[in-house]
Image (cartoon, rainbow, N blue to C red; front, side, top):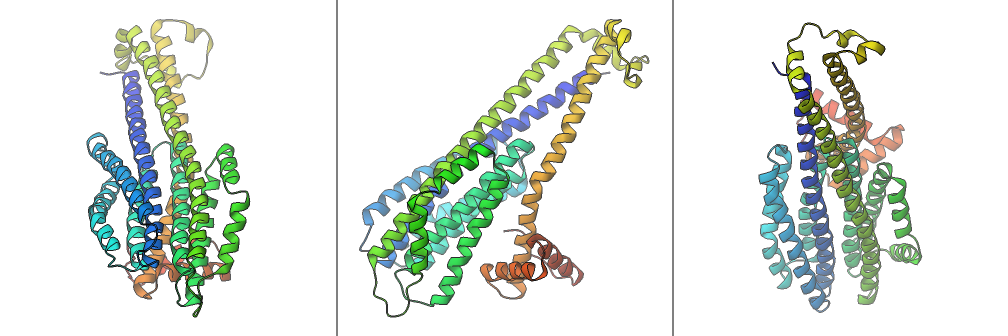
Length: 423
């Protein structure tokens, strides 16, 4: 019969496997972040190319496409490793990856249609945004599946930061067109405000799960004259009917947003470094603990297995110290193993409580997304309109957004209305 120490060693090996898996997940998240950044810039340049009728930025767009392809190759390589090294990863993550690969396979066709050009700027923006949303969903599933609270916190912070940066990228692409082309000014203004508010919500969650050092880097990156210039251009607003096309204004907006988003990329790189280092430190610590357990087993191997069948394991029920702890080797081993089990039990309780706190943020997002999907399906609303309705209801009732979402979903269950899955 095997002793408790052998099972403690087995538990520690499982913990190391999970941390190694988190390390692979972290590398995947970092690679996805680089690709998202490249596609965001390609989306913005494509917008300027299309709004100018194919007369501007052709060389910059060509270089950006080449960069995006390089990062795409890195992400595909990470996906290949994901299949071979992380076979216990949840089915939802693999489903997201499958969906993203379909989008990546379709990228050459999208680029060909932009280059011809066969698309309007809004159509190209929507296509890139759909693919980027799929990539961010991969990051979300990685954060949702993390079993270590410290790493999970960093993944939640990174996901929300990347999501906020994506809304900033959408604002860059949208503003480049809105400042140049005529259209429904009020509708565009509302969408612009929606993108600004969406960024602020994401960065608030990022701040909640970040440490002081990361927050200081973030605040420093958003200071200076760049933010003032951004706010000035935001006040210019969408082009009203009759205003002449101004390529310089559109270019100034794109360059201003690009400087801001590049500064965000610096923060994202610090997050990625901290994520890698945190995974490495925790895995190294777990391996050191495993070596101590194995050394103890090797030293007292005969007594360890004999104790498993011994009826005299009174130490389990004895809280006293003193002479019992210094008698026979058997009692010393029992005490040592019991102490390790108690430490492990307390640690697992703390880990479970911390994980619940971290995942509450992810669960709230799932509820809000399901509620928006319900409104979009049954009220025929856009995503922006559905979110605005939820937010306005929350403000009118003095409740949190997630509470309104929960109430809506509960009513849907009562009325047997099917709520769509989280996108």
